[in-house]
Length: 356
Image 1: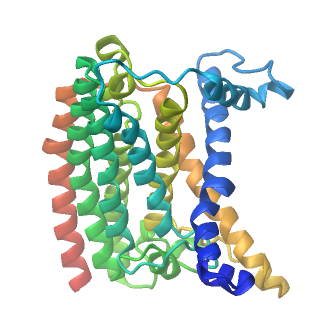
Image 2: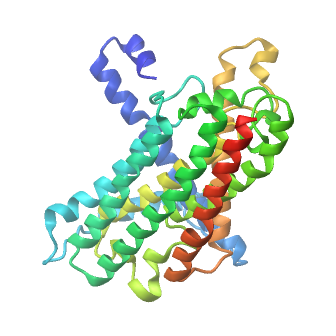
Image 3: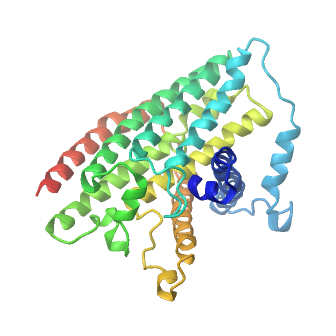
C-alpha cells in the first residue's frame, strides 16, 4: 500500500503518514461505529426488546450521538493518580491494537506491511495492550482498577500460550508466518481452506481436517479471552470491580479503551479468518476473473475478508448475550488444564501428519 501511495503522491513521507492513518479513518472508526450499534441491536434481539430506535432513522445515529457526548465529557484525573502513566495507558492500549492491523491483509492489493513474520509481529505487538492495561490500573491508584488490571494481564498472557501453539501448528502446515502467504495458499475454492486441511489433495489432507477444527475452536476461545469478551470479561466484573481497569477513566480516554476493544475484536476475528477460512479469498472464485475485469478482484477480496471478520465479530456478540461470566478460577482452569494441553497434543499430531 505504501508503494502504491508513494507512486501516486511522489513524496515518501506523506505516503507513509497516509498509509499509517488510512486503516484508522477508513476502516477502524467506521467499524467501531457500526459494531457498537450492531451489539446493541443484537443484545436487544436476545432480550426481546427494540434497542436504539430514536436517534436518526431507526436509531442509526445513536453511536454518533454517543461520540459527541464523550467528546463533551469532562476529562477527570484522580488527585492521587500518576498523571503521566494515567494519560499514557489508553494511548498504549490503542496503539497495540492498531499496530496489529499493519500485518493483516485486507486483500491481495491492500496489505499494510507484508511481513514474513506477520503472525509473530501480531502476537508480539499485542503485549503492548497488556502493558497499557497494567499501567492504567496501577496509575489510577484505585484498588478495583489494580485488581482488574492484574486479572486482565494474567488472563491475556495465559491465553496467548494456546494461541501461539495453534499458530505453530498452522506454520507446520503452511510453512510460513506471513498472513498474506497463508491466505494466498488457500486460493481457488473453499475446499483449499486450512479448516478443511489446506490446499492440495491426498490422505494427509483428510487426516488434518479434525485437528484443524480442534485448532480453530481453541484459538477462537482464546481470542474471546484475549479481548476480554464474555464469558471471559472477568477484569470488568461489575459486581466485584465496578468497571475494572478503566474505573477512573472518563471522556475520550475512556473512549480510547472502548475503541481499542472493538478494534481488537475485529483484529482477532480477522486473524482467525485468515488462518483457517481463506482470509480474503472467495469461497466460489472471482467474478472479476470471469468477466475479465482485473480491478474488480481486489474489491471482491476486501468484501470477503470483511464479511468473514464481521461474521466472527457477530458470533462474539452472540456469545456475550448468551453465556454467563466465568469465575476467575474457572477462567484459569479452562486455559491451563484444558486448552494448553489440547493445543500441545494437537500441535504434535499435526506435525506428525505433515511428515507423512
